Image 1 (cartoon, rainbow, N blue to C red):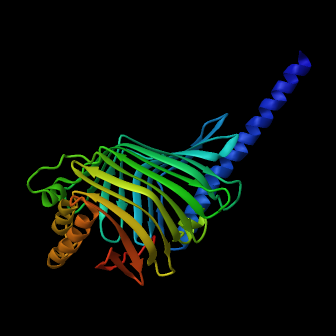
Image 2 (tube, helix red, strand yellow):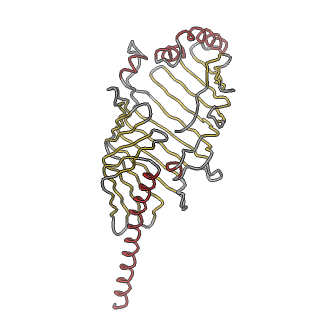
Image 3 (cartoon, helix red, strand yellow):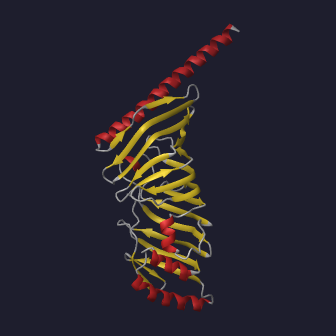
Length: 334
């Protein structure tokens, strides 16, 4: 019994020492990271930084945290932020966001509220912390621009990413937004007659993206990885009687211009076209020509209400079937 008791005491003391060393390393690691960002010109401040959870956890809480990258114009503020991990499995963490936070871009600031936003993140056993997989969920999500009282809401949001084992910089991404409700002003502009429901019936995407480098700590400290190939397995949105689906594959050059083809299927496409004009996405002067051309194509297919047509990206331009639409979007992450 004395030997057993002695072994138990030694094991407890060893584990306590491991936990204390680990806890100190975690806290100092975060503090060092914040100091390094400040040295690079970031705003990187936190009120307090504390790690607790003895004996089996390393739970770190930041209060009054602010991060702002002057090179991209992106910023984030929150009253607290938590990173939770098991002490014997530190490469798998749970991140917890507060119910209210502020996200700023070069164009607008957004107030983000939710009832439960958290993410499960698994990184590789490497100092660069390469992302292996992550799942983010949020309940009762609401995003409101600070400059105007127009809120976009979702009953639930799910975003998942997983690195493909054979391709270190390729990830499969999934997105689903349940009960997505666009801002009232936007809905009124798109649907002045009020024929469409308040919420989308479906809004989801399944896509595989190859980047120019893996997502790891350098994605925050240095520069975001940029897409080089995008395989859109399926993206779809259903809103009342309107339905839009897309699938295809494009490559992306160093300037961010896509090259390739995406097949678009639209049900009640004339109404979708009018909504694009109402939102300012499509110039009114061009809408009539486009509608005539697409109308001819849909009649040839046998169903005048449904379009099934390729969207072509070439030389920095985009065409819908034979109809030129204008400049292609630039696919670059700030």
